Structure formats: structure tokens, C-alpha cells
Length: 93
Image (cartoon, rainbow, N blue to C red; front, top):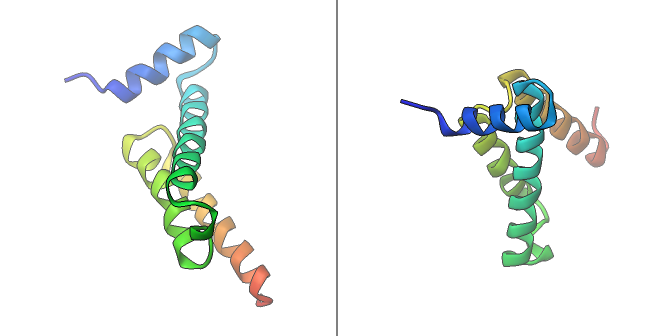
């Protein structure tokens, strides 16, 4: 059975003249931006506060991880950076 997401990344890689991994990163970034803009347009900017912001940011990242455009280490790095920023904002180390 063909994987439509991998085929999409490979088609974009051929179009851009790059590797499938770089095309997957690009497609993942575009997908995250589109989903975040959609969430903000639907729910407004008031929902981007507190723990709801983590869910709204985490849902597109989890989707990208499930379809396989980004490797697992990239997702773990993003999660580590989000928690580091959250701890820095709260004043903890």
C-alpha cells in the first residue's frame, strides 16, 4: 500500500531538486503554520493562553509526527525547547 504522505514529500523533493527529508521538513512546517492559523481564526487569540496554548501548538506537531514527515528526534527537540521557554518564562531554571 502506498504512503500518500511519503509520496507527497518525494514529489516535492523532485520538484525542488532536494531530498525527501528536507521536503518533509518543509511540508511539516507549512502544515503547522496552516493549522495554527486555522486554530487562531476559529477560536480567536484569547485561547492562546495557559495550557490551551500547549494543546493548540502540540496538536499540529503530533500530527506531523504521526504522518512521518519529521523524525522523532526533531519532535523531542521541539518539546524540550517549549518546556525550556516555559520554565524560563516562569523564572525557574
